[in-house]
Image (cartoon, rainbow, N blue to C red):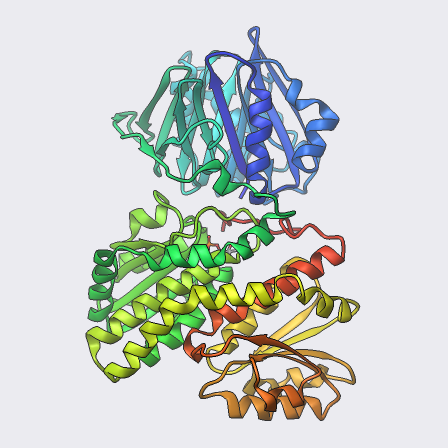
Length: 607
Ligand code: G6P
C-alpha cells in the first residue's frame, strides 16, 4: 500500500515532480518517504521516517539533482516505520536503488541465500532482497535490464517496483505483479506511479502495466516485456478523462469534506451507467443459484446493504462475504452455479483479488463493480461495471460507498424485473425513488452540511458510541460506526438493533450516546421498541429519522431529520451522509487529519 512515483524527463529536475506526485499518493501510506535520483553519473539517495512534506522539507529532497528519479511513500508491512526501513533500498555498493509496493513472500529464503553469498543487509524489510538479487545477477556480466528480469523471476509475492541505478543513467526500470503500476507518457518525458491522479498534472496518457510485466522507461517513451520470457508486449496508450481539478480539493479544507459534498454529482454519474453493461451483469446474475457479494472495508458494508436488496427485490439468495474470509468460509462450496460479484473501489485490494482467483478456479462466474478503469478487477472479471464516482483521495471511503450502492441498487432492480418475483408496481416505485436519490442527498447536505457541528460539539467528550439499526439500516449503522472509528479513534459498537440485547446492552449506562437509524418502513415498529429498551437503561438517543416523525422525536434526545419519502431499501445512501459529516467534524474538532487517519491506507494491496 505504499505509493510509487518516478519520472525520466527530457529537461528540468525530477525531484520537485516526485515531491508533488508523492503528495497525491500519500493516501496510500504515509509513515516514511525517500527519493533516489541520478545526476552526473551518480546515484543520490535520501530517506527518513515521516510524512511527505515534512521529510521533503527537512532533508531538502526536492533539491536533489537530476532529471531522472523515483520516490516512495511507505506504509509499513515488514519492519517498523523508521529510517533504515524506508525506501529506496540499495545493494552493497549503493549503486542500485529499489522502491517497492507489495510483499515478497519468499524474502526470508532469498535473504539467507544472499547473506551466505556475502551480502550485507541493513533493514528488516522484504524489499531489500531485490537490489541485492539484482547485484548478484549483475556479477554474470549482463546489463542491468537483464539482471533485473532475472532477479524478478526469483521473486514470489506481490510487487510494483521501480529501479534506478548508476549502471544506467538514462532509464527507470519497473515491474508489476499484483500491485498496481501505471506508466504515463507526455512530451516532457515518461512517468510511472501507483495510480493515475499522481500523474495528472503532467499527462493523461497512460498505460496500465499488467501482472508479470516489466517496463523500461526512457525519455522518449517506454518498452514493455513479459517477465517470464522477456518477450516484447505491445500496449495501446489510453487517455483518461479525469481532470486534475477533479482530483484536487476545490477550496474545501479536506478531501473528505469535498467528497461528501460531491455525492449528489457522483450519484448522478452512477445513475448514468450504460444500459448494456447492466443488462450483461443482470444476465449473469440471473443464471446464479446463489450470489456472493465479496469485498473489504467500506465496500463490504455496501455489500451487506445490497444483499438485502437482492434478496428482497430479486428473491436471489445473497451472501455478503468479507474477502479475506471468503476462501475459508465459502471456498469449498462455491461452484459453477454460484456467482461472485466483487466490489472494490480500487479494484486492487489483495484479499478481494485472491478470493476471486479462487472462485474462478472453481468455475464460478466472477463479476465486478469498481471505480478504477484498467484495474486488476476489471481484467479478471467476466463482466464489470465502473461505478463512476471519480477519484477519491480521502482515505475513508464516502462517495465511493454511496456510488457502489447506487450501482448495486440498479442491478438489484434490473434483476427484479427479469425475475418478476415481486409486483410490477413495487419495482416501478423503487425505480422512481432510485432516480430521486441524488436529490435526497442534496437536501441532506443543505440541511446538515454545516449545522450538524452543534450536535458534534454537544457529544464531543464522549468516549463510546453505539450505532443501531434494523434490516438494511444495520448496514448503515456499521458504516456510520466505521467512519467514526477510522477518523476519530473513538471506540464504538454497531449492531443490528435486535441483536443488541445479546451483549452490547451491557455497556449501556447513564448517558451513553446511541445513534439509531430509523427510516420509515417495515422495521420501524421494532426500532421504536429497541429505543425504549435503551432509554430505560439511561442511554441518550440520537435518532436519524424522517422529518416530522413525532413518535421517534419524542423518544429521542436529539434528532437528525431526513427528507420525506425515502424508501427503506434505499435509505443507506442518504442516511449515511449525516454520519459521514458527524465523523468528519468530530475528527476536525479533535485536531485530527480526516484525510489521513493513522495506520490506515486507501488501498490495501498486501495480504
Ligand atoms: C481500505 C480503505 C477503505 C476501503 C477498503 C477496501 O481499508 O481504507 O476505505 O473501503 O480498503 O478497498 P476497495 O478499494 O477494495 O474498495
